[in-house]
Amino acid sequence: MLSYQHIYHAGNLADVQKHALLAWVLNYLTQKDKPLSYVETHSGRGLYQLDADESMRTGEAAAGIARAQREGWFGPGHPMARVLKNIQARHGDAAYPGSPMIAAHLLRDQDSLHFAELHPQEHAALSLAMSPFGAKVYRQDGFELVQSLLPPTPRRGLLLIDPSYEVKTDYDRLPGVIAKLHRKWNVGVIALWYPVLTDKRHARMIATLEAQNFPKAICHEVTFPPVREGHRMVGSGMFILNAPFGIEEETTRLSQLFAGL
Image 1 (tube, helix red, strand yellow):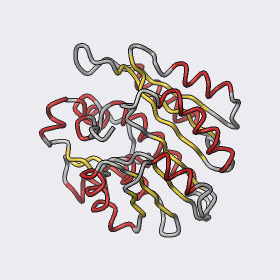
Image 2 (cartoon, helix red, strand yellow):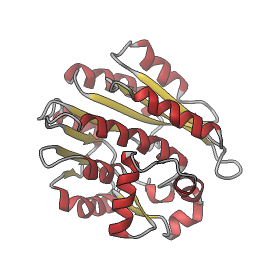
Image 3 (cartoon, rainbow, N blue to C red):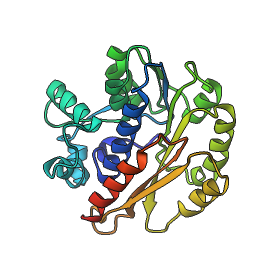
């Protein structure tokens, strides 16, 4: 459970989809001059160097964010483009922001940031990366944190659930976890990321979530070629409750881009 380190996969095509939608939602939420809370269950280290040996070994970033930037997937008006520009200006061209850093760069002084990360080395790196932003970083199981933290203050906001799925029971437990969290925090945007694998193990989880008829729920999936022969991940999905108005424009745009791969 503590073995996963995202540096091997940072900036891959799944990150491109997930982070594009995350940036879009956060940008939407900050259009109102009202404070909000941002919470993550599985945060990673927050900032990655894509020229690190681990990243170079898998080649996933080269097939992901490097290609997306080369082909202009994020125009200058897209919030993800703004984040990438700022991060690379501060940390070098090989730097890539994880979701905590995306949130930290798009949110405002009045907003609250809460990040859980259980892996000791990842937690230490995350604490350092988030230190300039006044974020609260917890070395705690993310599911335990959100059960105690929700509803947050301010009540308006977004929760990102982004487990590694190394624990196979996550697929079965997540619909119940999300239903409980939604009952506690019915005004919050709750976003769940999941991998699309060749064995389609996510399918029952998504069917169970959709059967619960959550308000303003959307499910967006993209597919892409496996990054190497035998690689089981062939797509990426986001299930979002209380999805903001207009998000379909961004999901449609992303679907068209991924369809061209």
